[in-house]
Length: 276
Image (cartoon, rainbow, N blue to C red; front, top):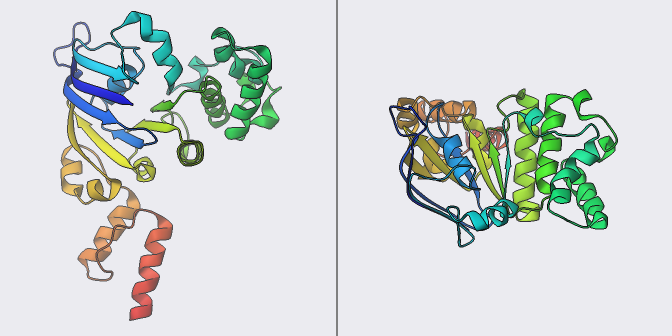
């Protein structure tokens, strides 16, 4: 679906490249998490996926369309929707349902279809009961759900969450991750999650770790979290549950395993206790 080939990019006046020789492929139906500390290049890479930024060198292809082809920009943005960090920057009207319908209306979608898309999008993010509300009266987490619904109403094949949880509290972050995972598993949407919160990548099929504008490592969450020392060298931490797992394994209290969540750890510990 998306092919990135050896791209480079520098911001005006910057001493270092924001992206330096990045190559990556994202397949249909994948949930890919791209993680890194501030300045690693992950958000710059996200903006390359729907032609918000164009590489200085290399190429980006979306469904066979080159992002460098200006005639294909609108088609690419119909295919790839981005949810940004600050939902206030994506809310443009004073009524929730009007805001969600803004995108498809500007694409010339018929009114009857817009109504259906708005209903389905709000339902998908659990905000249908707020259709008539004013967005500015909602909480940060609710606003982010509205922003997600607005992107969903355009009906893209790929959803990019560009640090969409950064301004939310832990409960709000958890809700957004659950929505992203559900859209991936139940709706078949390809999801690209840009984040610096390592606990958010456990839901992904594949993790891409970035540092200094380059890809430092890639693999499944289980594979990545076995490289804890390398992650820490990149100024990244493993999730608390992985820290606990590694400590218990080091003490010989549980067998080697790939548990990432509380429920998985509980199962491992229970099995160990029963054996003893």
